[in-house]
Length: 551
Image (cartoon, rainbow, N blue to C red; front, side):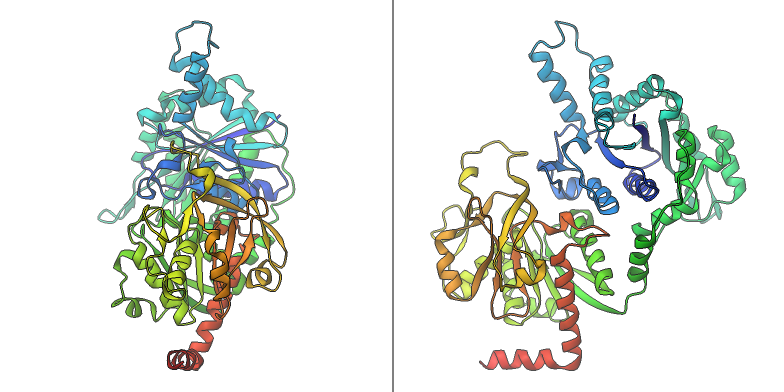
């Protein structure tokens, strides 16, 4: 039977519950345990699929097509295993399930209440992954902050699970903040005391307290927290700010978080965690041999979490190439023909990010044109690929009004159009083309050189596609479809022939990039940017650009 670890948070949001959960899971996995992590979010949306990125960061898509919280991306990147629909549950999904059961008469006419009906459904979902025998330990992150009204049913469900299961089967970790007051030059434990008190008043008492802090916690502070929060001093864990999230597993290893959890769960200690590959990755990440500058062209630049998986993929690919990837944010609304050279000429590569809607579209198209005309390594993802198609149609094929029906429903040249099966769909949320689909790659192409195979599987999240009515015209003029979905003939990959690195993909390769398995497209893109940087340093890029402009 599986053991259960619950991670709650107090004092403030954004303390990093997801990173602590993922780091603990990595340590347990490295000791040989089969571990998974799930996230319970207290908002009433059924899933994050309809949320603006400014509201909740990126929407992470799993292999089975679930639109989920971005923390699932951390789980997969740390553990190198897939999550699923079952790994992310919201209040909205819980209530939707209970209401549907009530409408079907499943409760036999009883009054449906938060306790026991809502909490029973939460408990069922919390223990679902542990009941199938595939995991030794299930870690559950409770979103929000203790004391929030919307979090109460989840905390009550944890209390009931603690009461129902044997003592050695459940462990509760509470993540809190120890603020440092510069004026007084001291760390303050009172917010943590109040947070633990508030949690204890709900009937849930933490077994371990993890303290986020800017300054080290001395033994006196740890003993004070332990005394007033009723835990053992060794169960007060210091979580200092780290230069990268990938250092946190080693920090937690040093603090013995995994050992304390296993003791609480009455689990026999197994051999030390094998983190050799993780340490090797960190070594390359912290001590790169060179640097490249990559322009990230998007329209949600004010919130870094909007492109979280892309930014993490750059880290993985940078370590693989032993280079530091400096990401330069470029807001697509700030780009026009007069500003494009100034903003992009110092870059070593250009990634045009995914997104929805027409805001900032023309800036993205101008950025693509600059990359194509100046032999700057280019990588387009989803909408970025579609912008490359529109740019090529306008400036190479001479189709001046080429566009996407997403931005211009009346365009007479829809080189990007809505997928046929999507045209009948009216309801939003979970209705796009989602999850993993097969792509067949043509040999002798850049895509084949990158993947070194003809059949791949990547994750999708889109409604619009390349219009195959224009495919022959594109390929006759130098832009080829090097990857095709064999089931519906959907163009998955486009690339320009006469360019050192110009590729766009309809899918989202960033969603499958992990520390142990970096996304091949990102690895080769950074390698191309590194090569471009070296050539520019030697003056070869400038000479080539002058030659192209003369031609």
